[in-house]
Image 1 (cartoon, helix red, strand yellow):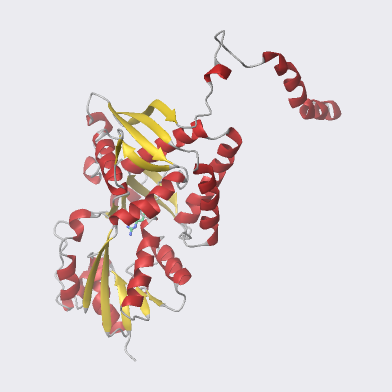
Image 2 (tube, protein in one colour; image 1 turned 90 degrees about the vertical axis):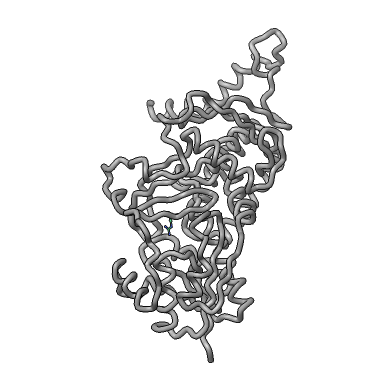
Length: 398
Ligand code: ARG
């Protein structure tokens, strides 16, 4: 029986070395190198040639950018998903999609195994293994970089033995993961917790102090919780995100420097740039505040944190995420409207709010003569509202 494998291929040093390693050490006779375009730009250029010259039998490149934003990015915006209150899951959200495509490609090429180049220390291996296992548990999962004994230099030396050019021209001392939802940078000097990132670490954002002296305004339109327009113009999901990335990045919005709690138990310091996702979440939170009553909002905010952790942990295809999305779907039916954000030197504020079914009622809150709020009921309300606490204090001498 021949062993046919689909490898999730990025074109980087590790996944390229995986191709000969799968053949020589893991018994593969047929390797499909599958690269997924999630918006990593120039990085993906020579990916086909690289895969084939490293010994892949087939090179597949899937353009999944629009699907990525529509089926993963925007649902995460509806959930206001921020891991540990900060990270909009830009890298994490890519893995369940890559996992789905691995499974689809394995079926298309009659492969019994899938492979990836993740190491054993990160979250991505957890996400890919879980996704593949949840979608088709019969597929074998191979992770060469989790088992091979190589250091970085040895990986390059190993590749050279198979005629793979070390395409690393001027290697930066950190690792980057880029897609249209955001950019992650880790390792190297970032591991020193007192090192302040220098400007060359950042690629999508201008330093706030260097950003334009004039603010920018942008109006984000939502239909049932999903972003649909910018400044009144209806646009495809991918275009909305790309435009907000450019605008936010230019105004110094979207940098995150955080100490992250990885699934595998270690704390690691990570840098992110995700201007578009952060702007969308900010606008969406504001619109929800206008369209949802306080109790629904409170419960949703609590569940958003649970959702963020489930996605971070790689459980996109598990029942918890699906159940939470069912709750969120129910809350989003009335979240239609537009929020105008003001961007200025790294800061974001809300400049205008508009919901089709706004719960903000001027006649209830105004101090003007047209107020319809019956203040005479307040006294009795406060009396009963404070009753349980009063009783407790009487009984316990508080
Ligand atoms: N720590 C981040 C996360 O777990 C980023 C991972 C980036 N992946 C990578 N292969 N560099 O979501």
